[in-house]
Length: 169
Image 1 (tube, rainbow, N blue to C red):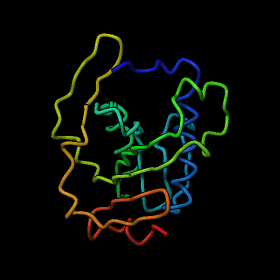
Image 2: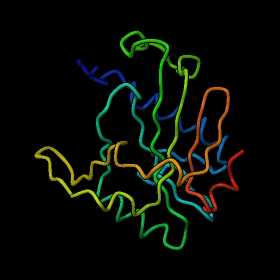
Image 3: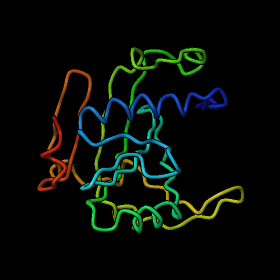
Image 4: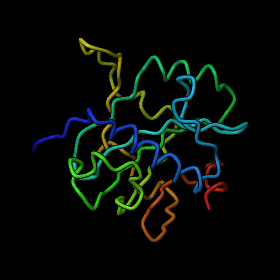
């Protein structure tokens, strides 16, 4: 399976498209990479988003230094990871020059996991950057532990009993 190199800014554009969309669903402001901070935040929540195409079965890279820093900056808030799996109607290579990716996103699935979820994965130190933890979808808790909300082109899973459930439209 060949992976497309995101040298054309696709990764940033898909993160922005998914972030702007998710902001409307969870009603927590998407601040993205402003100041190198956490992706979504308000007085109650801190949420870091990770994106991946559904068809690729690899892990997400979660920066360990950021995890610690965000935890300190947002102490006292409910902290979550938002793992976004998305499907596109076209190949990434066909979207190189497309600025607005929203019309090409066919489906999204978002798993909100408690902040400490990634602590079960060892810290890795790649030679070029890091340190990182690498969670995989296969390691997510059983779906029976989540409240599932469905829309026309999405599915959102939040931990049962979490404050986040009340925020989702």
